[in-house]
Length: 200
Image 1 (tube, rainbow, N blue to C red):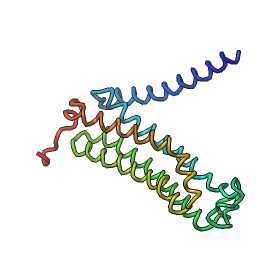
Image 2: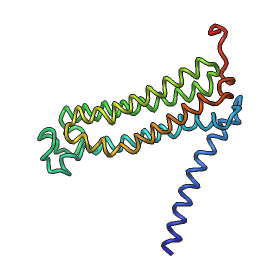
Image 3: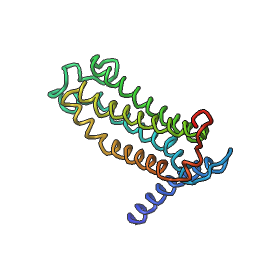
Image 4: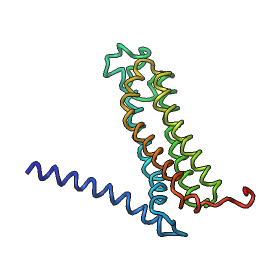
């Protein structure tokens, strides 16, 4: 009975995940002017939907800073004010870290949305190149937000946060590398984004 429940749980999970991925891709591929390639539709959905959702998981890794001092008895805390239960009670250093990290994560989500928009709406070569720039700037912002700021502002405690977010950060870069490689190597993509007249 337990094995059946386990199977049903994961089957439902992956079915729902697949539908949440397939349906937006179908809409992007067929609605509006339509796209010539399912792979391009997949890239747009990944940029517009899945990478922002992955970015939201970094916020979950940032906010445990509220309880770093509590979990470790305050022994390794940056300062004694780290024993706090709310953002208003935290020291200026920790408030700065959380504020900058959350702003960076939200900024990366916006950049990914703009890159998806450039791929879907701006069907010229300049739009494709701008999408590449935006998606890799978003990656840089994520690295600074969850990989650099914890080490700079939280000291020893920052290593725990970086380690917690390492797997999601690696998945983020794998997706971006896959999207970039597909868009750069597929000949149909290049022909779909022709040069503008003033670029010739």
